[in-house]
Length: 87
Image (spheres, rainbow, N blue to C red):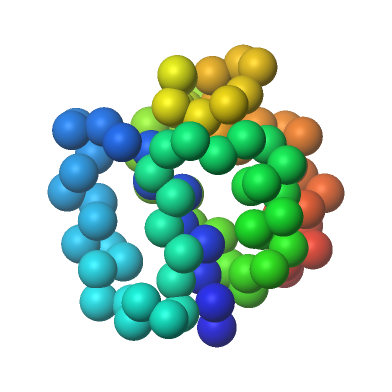
């Protein structure tokens, strides 16, 4: 099962990497910064599971200034249709 791990760079959430550290490299893709919305959508389509690590709100996963997004979120409500297909 291929896993996409979105873990924005943030020293206050570095400890979360232990959650996915033991997943074999060939079974995971870890994205920490620099992707745009379409790239993340394309990656979601290629993976069986998505793990979101970091700070969030009811509106999504934060990553202000680290990803190419319009609203400061890596994942927001616009990703719902793509995430629903995983379940």
